Image (cartoon, rainbow, N blue to C red; front, side):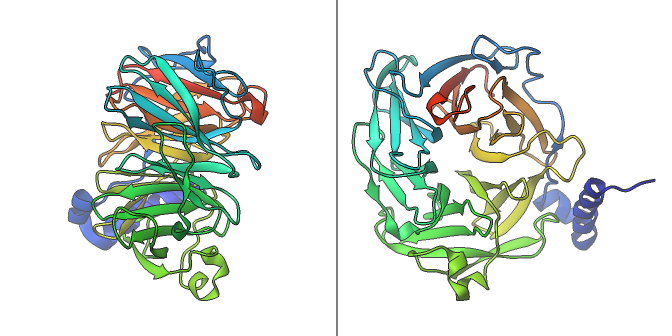
Length: 390
């Protein structure tokens, strides 16, 4: 019997953890990485809809914005290269979807406003005069953190509710920022860095929830995250340069190659790394770190080019692909995690899927194809998918 690399890694992850810690630990504290299986929403349609989206039964799509074109009847022209995004509830019963622009010059971020029925009622700019705005993250106090992805990149805090200009938050570091997640329970922020020498960071504000000052740290991994035995410790670093360029910090911390999406939900920080095509889960309360998806563990794993991530009301992870076959895949929670395709864009092979985010009621999923069917930054398309999300 031939044991290939995928099966060797899978058996090592499963067997090593169980033998070292016993079956009691396995049941109580550790779930195996996700393996391919059926989607809770069933199979995607065999052909795309009129918008080029393959969907499960009961779901529909609409295009809400195209780069270079006016959004609905708002008069506002949508930005090129749409990237990371998030949704924010409004007191009026409507909501706002924010979207970054990953242009190397004239990036920034915009927003689309919806009324309580989902109709578009406004669109406007919330950040200007920045560059390479890739992903970011929402805060519990209702602001959008827009991250610049280049060596001198910083984080900008924006008001998504009106036309405005963001405020730079230099204490959150100067590096190729990808995404940020806010843990309101631990009162900390977690950040990813999209370089081959990237680190995983956390930021502790001096006076929560102000982001004007605080302590920035980079992570060190101890133990095996595939076997469920890993924990994180933290090393203080300067906010003026990447941790990898600070020699005393670089030698004490762990490389997370190509850090991408980052999202907090119910006591867990989820993040992705494209260098090894993994999805990670960190539990701040215990320090635990585990790999919940690795495409090398199981033959036929559908998720490649891991990128932005969000979590639905049911606790399902939705992970967008940068390239791959242009799918958003779902990873189900629980001890028997399953990964499966949820939707697929046809004709977008030279693009990437960005900015997945749920409306406040959990019934609509927003995301963008950064370069659309043209493969150009000016061809970006922003979608909405509606349906019976569990």
